[in-house]
Image (cartoon, rainbow, N blue to C red):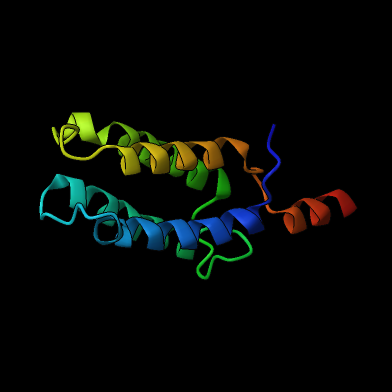
Length: 124
């Protein structure tokens, strides 16, 4: 059931990375604790991995797409459980849960190889 192209996934990576960085300020939980720093750190890591991934929107082409998707899955799970793992669920949890679920969903529904790479393999 992988129906998201790597190109679309790349666009989502950059948007989600930025959203994670600004979410604490946008949604009012920029209190200096884990609730704020977990999404900011994951957003920075997401942007860095997007830049380094071997797909259409990557700049450095160092990280294979399957590894990138695994990293997305792990970060989505961490984001999802972070309110309980780090003890701030009584203050805020919904942005972390929603964005974590979106990240998990994107990781399991994105194609494992860029289409242009698949096309060139099929021609040989």
